Amino acid sequence: MIFPMIRFLFLIFFLCTFGSFPAVADSKTCIPSKHASLEGLTVSIPISEFRNRLVSNGWQSDVVRRQDRPARHKASYGYLFDYIDQGYWEVVACSPTGLSYCKFHWTDVYQNLLAVITAGERKPDGVVDQYVTRFVFDCDR
Image 1: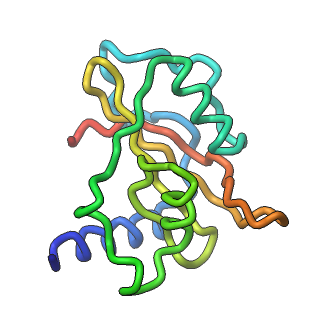
Image 2: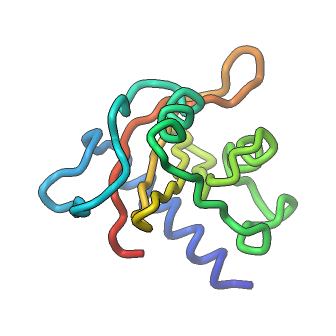
C-alpha cells in the first residue's frame, strides 16, 4: 500500500522538476523502430483533441487499475480524479500545485508506451481539459 504512494510522489516530483521539456523525443529518449502513427500529434492542443487523434492513429489508452490509484480521501491529487470522473482512465498522476501537470499513458499494437504530459488550469465552465506540453516514448516499461 505504501509503495504506490511513494511511486506517485516520485512521479509528482519528477513532473514538477522536469516539467518544461521539448514536445517530442530528443537524443536521450528512445524511439522504437516500429510504432503506431504519430501523424497529427502536436503540442499546445487540448488533451481531449489529442486523445481523439491518438485513437484515430491506432493508439489505445493504457488503463490504470483502480487498485493502483490513490484513495480519494487521502490527499490532494490535482486534477487526477477530475480526469477519472470524465472517463480518462489512462491518467497516471497529476500534480496538485504549480502548472498542475498530468501524465497519461497510451499503448500501440507493438506494446510501445507513449507518455503524454499536460499542463494548465480548469476551464471557466469547470471542465478540466489541459493542453499537451510533451509526448515521448517510455522505453523503461
